[in-house]
Length: 402
Image (tube, rainbow, N blue to C red; front, side, top):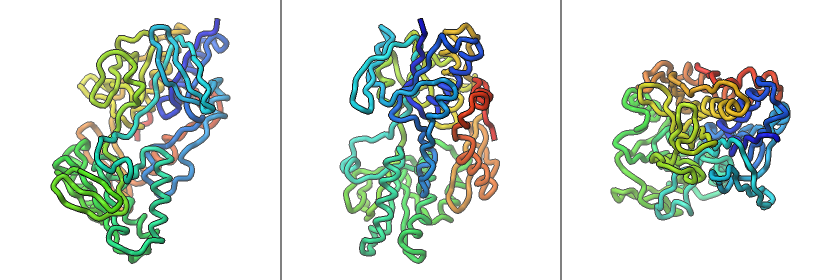
């Protein structure tokens, strides 16, 4: 009987889990014995790290030919329920059909969702760049501003959240607004961060560079303040300040896909499932977790994978390989990603490239931007639909390091 590997999600972790699993099956000479199925709404990889950009073409490369080349089946739909006790998942197809898929190994690679607390007006009036459709909605809204009468609110964008995505979104926004409203438009872009300083997760070392870059881009920073309410005319902060703005972009962090909550045991504050060194879900036989749903140690020094593309690529390769290796008799591979870098896009100023968990600054301005372009346009995109080419970079210890 054919054994089944089911993978939920075709994002960075899900894609590379599928490719790595297919590679492991092929290495063992077991192509006809193990079937690999990916369940996601469409056979596409949405390039979420780039959705802050103004040009959104090419942000959803098609994976159908690649999956066909490596022998992976794709089912359009979403996994809705995990039945760990009987090793099966319920699926709702994009045609609303409901059915159950049995599995021998299940890889949860369903990614993350934007954190949306119950702030008055957030759901009704804020935009975001978390998913491709929401990025398109923001783009359409910004372009429609040109048809409105000029007011301070029309020309103002508030970015709620001064983390990685908020900084990248804000840095692009002044030029993006001027391209729509005119080169001489008096635009205002404000980042509101509830922590005492911008980029709280990025730490103190790169902060002076980030602050300088945002200032040169024309972005104001309001730190130590939270957004208390949002309406059609702007935001009210926790200190009572009113900022008139026709555009509010919410970027305040992510949480693991709710499917992760169906896996038994404790979860971290982001909703992630603790993973063992081989990315098995702790306490759940036959289930692997990867990407943004996995809480996994990257090294022996207490560092944990971030909810980032950089870590998802490696996490996916390891989880997919190990899920297949257990079925075909290959050695399993522990996850390890001790080299950590960040590359923060800072709009027309350039980009900031850092190394290490203490984020030592290595490249800035145009030198950093050159690396960011390479990452954004080449390294994170899927390989060509060629079996040998895909397998050559699908091994579990393959890591791209700038």
